[in-house]
Image (cartoon, rainbow over all chains, first blue to last red; front, side, top):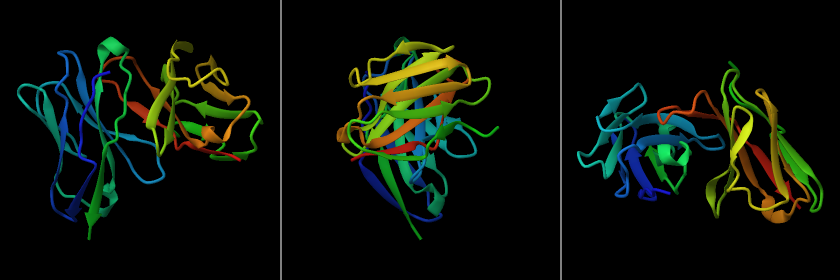
Length: 111
Length: 115
């Protein structure tokens, strides 16, 4: 399985942006980069995904490096409700589009 | 839509007993996934189905675990006999299609405790 590397934890102040890095140096050309997050005591939920171009949606932005070996999830204005574990996952077409979750980054938002 | 529904939400049982976890995927979704989450091993994929057919069960830990999907609106994960090391949160997820851009929708999970 293609692996991703994320910091174990990050802290942010409320209303400030949060930049969550992810390294995926073994990514292949058809792998999509997906981000999910897991709020306390809940199942994971989809955040955003991309292939090559940067992506924006109502939850976040995804910036993908030109060589695709890394990406950054950007939460533009963190709120207390954004405190969660954020997972960066390579969705591999060759592996049947399964999601292989790593350890993720635990985000703490301080008021 | 009510989202993915799992039952029970909590299950406490004794070692050796049979445990059955249930999942109702989102209507119209044709892929279903079972995951297990523990502190030690994180979130692991156990098995997934496409169009009610098991596609990959390589994550099923051992023969004590079995999963079925008799129709598009229902799936079960059974553990027989259960052991304390099976204690975990079990998530079910569904997906509308099988493309690389298609997202999974997770249920609230079943917290299983085996004494």
